[in-house]
Length: 327
Image (cartoon, rainbow, N blue to C red):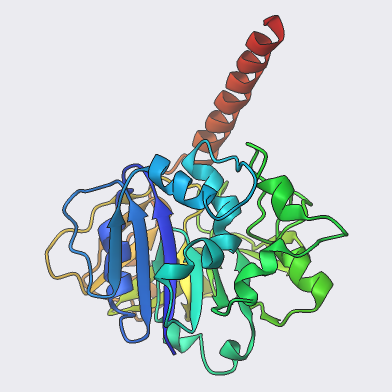
């Protein structure tokens, strides 16, 4: 089975991108990552990555050629809405692959083959969130984003507005999206909702969110926990009922977090992930005492930072609207 992830990203890659590449390298047996970017800094790109350098404006022109109506794509973040169409847009780049997917770069991957097995690959779509989804690479499947949802050609509505519509995932915005299309037409899919660690954006500690009922998120209670990446395997260590537990994950998604990379050394075989930092790890804790001896959190103002950011965005929108109304 050959799988390729398509990742357009414009701007400067975030701190810790080298750790993402390290986790990509440990999945080189069956998985390739295809990057489109304008960040030409010198990274140690693994052998299972393909990098296409170019500007955002040139990519926009490439996307426009694939549609017979004027598309709206004024800023890179809007690319999220185009993720379900990547198999169609980048069709010439993914010939020979069995599946293609999209994923985010604010992630660290575990061992993908431990989760994606022959059973999952029986479906035409695997997972349902924007930070990772896979699609079977066929001409028909790559065009299913064009199908109707509730009688509407939803993709045309999404691709002609500047607003972000979360078209790429099952979302809490209650907007019609690619998952609605899949459900309405009865296409095969494999959800795997609890295989990955999606971190709640507003928490100062690591609290996971899971979509178990439609688009409603369930947020777990606070736990003393940290994540360990070791030789390609991602695990979460937790203190539960006075005992140390561990669980392996497909990937961790640091949604809305500014992560600081404090991992040093050229030969990185393991590191730990705490709520706002990547850190070196000498020894993986094997009991409760060793866990508490290992730093598992720091002073972290994630909630305040996020609320401040959203307030600034609202004030800017208010100011922009006032200027438009004056004209």
